[in-house]
Length: 267
Length: 302
Image 1 (cartoon, chains in turn brown, cyan):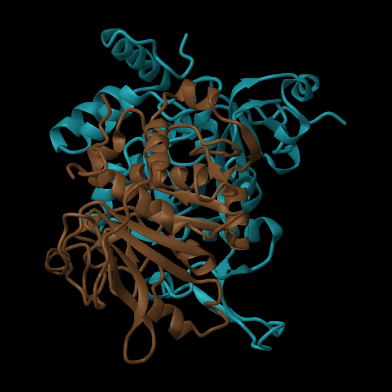
Image 2: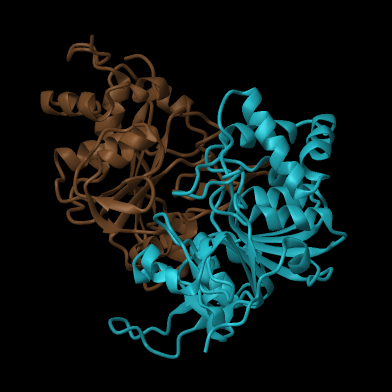
C-alpha cells in the first residue's frame, strides 16, 4: 500500500526529505520555514523527529505547535492546526529581521558561493524570462540562515554566475565585511542527486560549494556532469543517509498522499 | 464629534486622480484587492501612473491596459498561479519601468512615508543585486558604533514611498472612514493609507459606527477616519481576489484571466466581455460564467 520503498531500495524522495530535515539540525527554538512541497515535508519531518523545538507555519498567518500533514484541503488545514502565535506578514518581517528563522528556497540559478536567483533570466532590466522577482530573498539571506532545494539538479541551475543575485552568497557577504554580514549563513543545497555544503573555500578563503554526500544510486561523476559550476569533491564522498524507521513512519503521516514522489520519482 | 459622511462611488474617487500620479494599492498578491476601483481606473483615461503594491491582478491589469508606466512592488503574483502573466509580459516587453524591492523594503518605504521621515534603514537588500540594478536606492552609514566591533555600519536607506492616493479594500467601514478588517492578516493596508495624501477605503459593507466594535476585537479597527478621504461601499469589490471570511478567491475566473492574457485575440475578447463594461454588467457576466460552470459566483454577488 505504501509508496515508500523498503530499506533495501529507499525512495529517492525519502532520501531528499531526510537530507532536507537534516539542514535544520541544531536550529532549536526557531522558525523552520521551507518553501515548496518537498522542503515543507522535510521541514515538518525535522519538527516531528530530530528538532522538536522548531516552530513551523500554517503556510499563511500563524505559527503552529503541532505538525499537521501537507496537502490538506483548506477546511482540513484550518481544522488540524494548533495555533501558537499570530504571524501576519508584517510580523514575519519582524521575526526574520530579528533572525530566529531558517528558510529553504528554490533557486532558478545558484552559483558556487550560494548566490541565488529567483527573479529573472537574462538582464534584469528587461528579462528574457521574468520569474518571481526578488521577493524576500535579499532580506532573508542577510538576516538569517538559508538553505536551498533543487528538485532537478542540472547545469542550467548550478551555474558559474547567476543572472540576478537575489539570495546573497558568501563572496557578496565577504565583500560587505564581517559586521554587515554577521547574520548571513547559506547552510546547504539539497538536490535530487546530492547534498552540498559550503565547507570548502576558494583561494581567498571564501566558503564555496563542497559535495557533502551523494544520494544512494548516484555517482560523484553524475553530480559533476549535472553541475555547471565549480564543486569541490573531497576524498571519499559518503552516501546520503537512509531514513530511520521512525522517519519513514513520520513521512507517511506528514505526506499521506505522496506529494514528494511527484516531485522526485524513483529510487 | 461624529465623522462626516465621506461616501462616494468608485467613479467619483477615480475622478480625483490625475495622469502621472503615484497610486498605492493595498492587499497582498491575489488577496483582498480593491478590484472594483482598479476596474474603474481601467475605464478612465488616466495614463502614466506609478503603482505601488504587493502586486496581484491589480498590477497585471493596469500594466496590460497601458495605464501604468512604473511599478514599485515587493512581488507580483496571483498566489495559486505564481507568476502574474500580464506583469510578466510587461517586464519582458520592457513596457514598464520596474522597481522590484525586497518584500520587507516595501513595508519600510510605506512606513517611512506614514511617519514623515525620508527613509528607514535596513540590512535587507545589502549584498544582493537590488542596489546594483536600482541605483536610485542609496545607502546610509550609521552614526552609532556597532557595540562589538565599533564599526559604523552601512545600511540600505529605503526611501519613503509617498503616495498621491491609496486604495484599500476592507470588510466593514462606517461612512466617515473608520474601517475594520476580518480574516487573519491586515496586510499593509493601514500603512498604505498613512503613506498617501488621499486614501480611499472600499468595503464589503458600510455599517453604523456604533456597530464596528461589536464585529471583531479592537485590534481589527486598524484604519481611522483621520486618515481617510473617501469610503466606497463595494460588496464583492475584491472579486476575483479573495476576501475571507466573506468570500474566497474566484479561482475559475482567475484562471480565465490568466489564460486569456497569453493570446492577444483571447485578451481582446476577455477585455470586451469583462473590462470594457460597467461594474453591474461585470458582476452579471461573472455570475453567468459561474452558472455555466455550475458553481456559485464568489464575491458576494446577489
